[in-house]
Length: 224
Image (cartoon, rainbow, N blue to C red; front, side, top):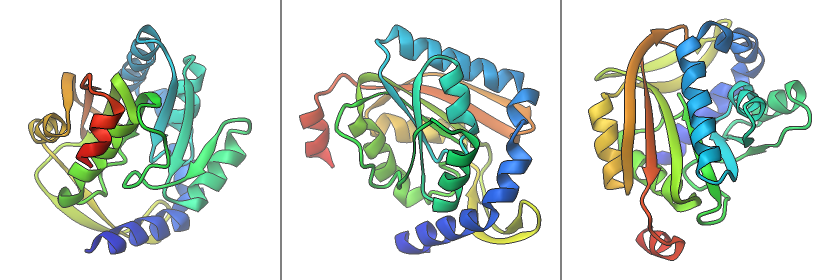
């Protein structure tokens, strides 16, 4: 798929399943104690680092955004799918949700205290990961914290149906934590912690914490 195709297919697929997806995942965090612990640690570390806005990238219906707000962070959500953003705004009134792409974030350089990409890199092709992580580093302030969640494996499968039997067309990528850590290092991040786990979110998932390097926003922009 070309860049245009995978973005267009992802947007259309999640517009189609937005309502049923939101219903299926609404209470998922209630059954995920380890993921809740990781999100609580992320919120604590962001606060200890001086706070600041936290962007939940690929926020879907906003469940993680709302959870992070409940943990005391200044969290808001961005999603490629207008349908998902509509559901998030309806289900979490008063919180900020925007339509946008992690391939071209409409956020100022070094403006974020933290970023979360919670199982939202899984549809990004390998050849686009470097550019996406460069965007993450650009918008994070020096020393800002990144939390990633993703499926572990070595393959990619085409998902043509999901969440209530609705049609979809997205590749679901499974990746090894070592490979993701290498991509992060190449993009100017330092990995601080990682773990794997099994839960309702993933048959085998990974959670990874990383910090952006202490580089000025001007230097980051010049590398893009």
